[in-house]
Amino acid sequence: MSTATADIYRPGLEGIIACETAISSVEGRQGAGGLEYRGYPIEELAESATYLETAHLLLHGHLPTQAELDAFEDRIRAARAVPEPLIELLRNVPRHVHPMDTLRTSVSVLAHYDPDLAASPTDHAANVRKAERLIGQMATAIAYRERIERGLPLLAPRDDLDHAANFLYMVNGEVPSETKRKAFDVSLVLYAEHELNASTFAARVTVSTLSDLHSGIVSAIGTLKGPLHGGANEEAWKVLEQVGDPDKAHAWITAALGRKERIMGFGHRVYKTGDPRARILKRYCQQIAHEAGEDRWERIAEPIEREVTAQKHLPPNVDWPSARLYHYLGLQIHIYTPIFAMARVAGWAAHVIEQLDHNRLMRPRARYIGQPSRDVEPIEARG
Ligand code: SDX
Image (tube, rainbow, N blue to C red; front, side, top):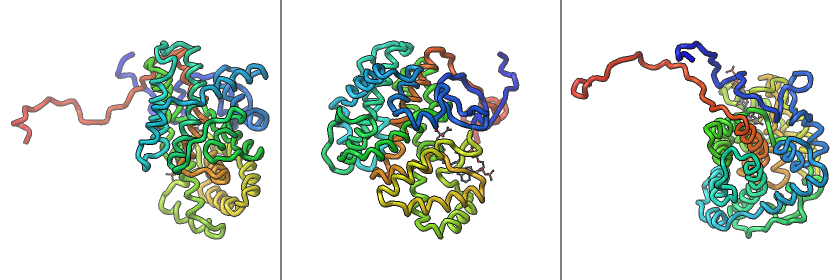
């Protein structure tokens, strides 16, 4: 192809189709925006499928039978244990290091000890095994680091608890109520996959060079950390705390927008009429807020949503309700984005495997706007 070919340039690749995928769609059945994982509407998955059923759908391409789910859950439970050297490292990383950074490091360390380390990067079966192990291991790595941060003893994973309940137990030291377990599990289903978002794109670009799955996941974690992407759920909680009172929402939002600030938890590159995940999670938010005696935050969130929608026509995205839910579940703000990552690893891995199964190196072009072509002057002539 001639380098002179005038190609399409869209800042931020907005609206550009960069690959084809069978994993998820954000078009919705009427094309008006809606999320489906392998053809199943997110509303139905959130209601009727657990996170591990959803992860099986993403990785294996179909919802599991009961026997398949039992075997899958056994493999994830077996993968909850992490190597001792990683635990030692998590104990020694300085306290001020953000949990997204320790998660990124953890996945790099887990790669060193993965039984399929020597497998070819395009070995489909090995990649699925690596992905299943990461689903179990990442939850444990986040929980262990959190307990170390809090100066509390590590709690071993419990085989009698499902993925959602076990994580909450390993972090908080108590088995959650069924309503809290379900609400957290729904948040993991909603966070599990989202087409070609920035972190998924980063993962696909990484493995399109025939690099390995763990390297793709490390790229994705680094990308998700940013406040314009996964980091928004931490920032969304800070908005609620700063407003602090329903009667102050109008003045606070008006002032922030006046300063051209972005209100974290609102807006979306793809959903312009609302993020379906936010609508689903809001119901669970309200239920758990009441159970936790934290209704005041729902009373603060409502006028903020009204103000941002009225003044900027921007509806909430998934990070807006997830920040509140995680607060009600007793989780510290700094692990909100790591939780996003431990859910999204199923989607990231599915995309990595799809890329490696039908790979083409991703190498877009850049339009040059620098200095015109010129000759190098000898250093003595550079005045
Ligand atoms: C996630 O892509 C995915 O799928 C991501 C995700 C997933 O599941 O993987 O859905 C998860 O990342 C959700 C988004 C979380 N991020 C935030 O909540 C951060 C706040 N949101 C914004 O930064 C913004 O809405 C983006 C980044 C999410 C989307 O931005 P766009 O589509 O690139 O829009 P833009 O930056 O071109 O802004 C268009 C206009 C601008 O105003 P003008 O300069 O034209 O006057 O809208 C304004 C922006 O200033 N705007 C906002 C705003 N978002 C956009 N103004 C105030 N607050 C906001 N949140």
